[in-house]
Image 1 (cartoon, rainbow, N blue to C red):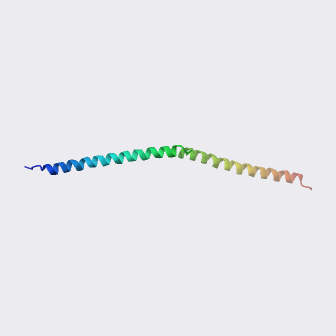
Image 2: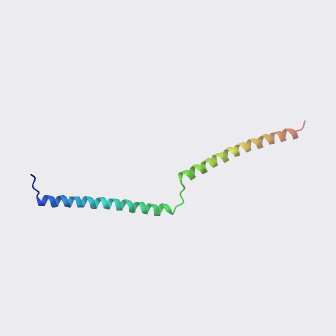
Image 3: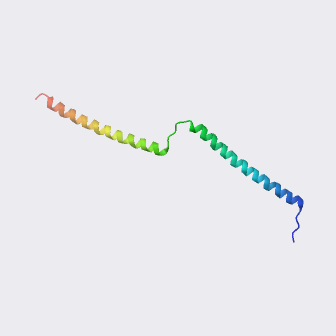
Length: 87
């Protein structure tokens, strides 16, 4: 049979209470930091990754179309120059 020493029992209760309090403080600090970060970054105009990728794809398509149109213009200018060249 095990006898319980009241000093040790009180010490164990104290340690358990302190551990619970520290864990609660840690959770509260994390939540507070998260809220502060939302406030700071929420006012900035950040875009989501999906929006960024969509705009990036649009820019790539526009660049490709511009290069294609540039090649067509150069070809048409070459034809126009050849047809107006003196014989």
